[in-house]
Length: 229
Image (cartoon, rainbow, N blue to C red; front, side, top):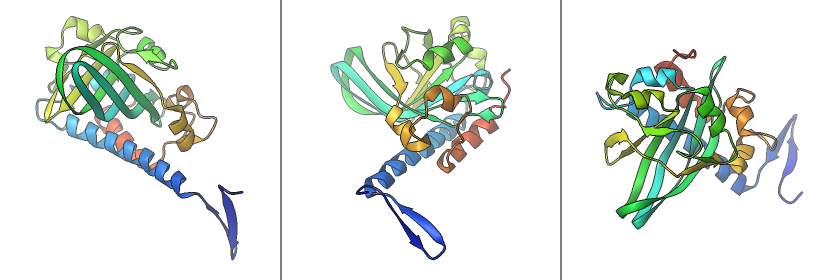
């Protein structure tokens, strides 16, 4: 019992975890809270956020705070985030995800970008729940329209399986994610929900959300009712 031990104090029993276990849980909790902050800031941006009527139609929402990007000619992207989907009881506990990918084009510089991905139909959701999902290859994805309503959306955007958005240096806009891969962060999900947790079960309502996810889910339920339009 070199990693975990229990001690009884008076009538109570306390489990003492190694320091690195607390550090990992703190990282996961921080990710949930940062995702909630990104959603709130994006939705409250005057005339320049995600149209609420599109969010109300979404089956799932993925948020990646601080997606890292570097590049010179060939760019690279890497980030960790969360994915939550609608259930009969509202938005699900968030699954932890990671996104990785490259892009070809003339890029210079480095920085961090907040990413939001709306999954607009059941087929897009099913594809997203695969062990490894390629944006644009496994489902249609487009940069989403911004504004208070979806009136500026093109017909193609309204029929896309996914809509993607980014925010960097205060600018929020639709963004192309063609070729990026998105997959469950299985180890992190096990840390949060237990060793048997699978992403499909988490986002379909089998697991209860942690306290750190409360603000994200509260805001999602506020901006978008449980039933899709």
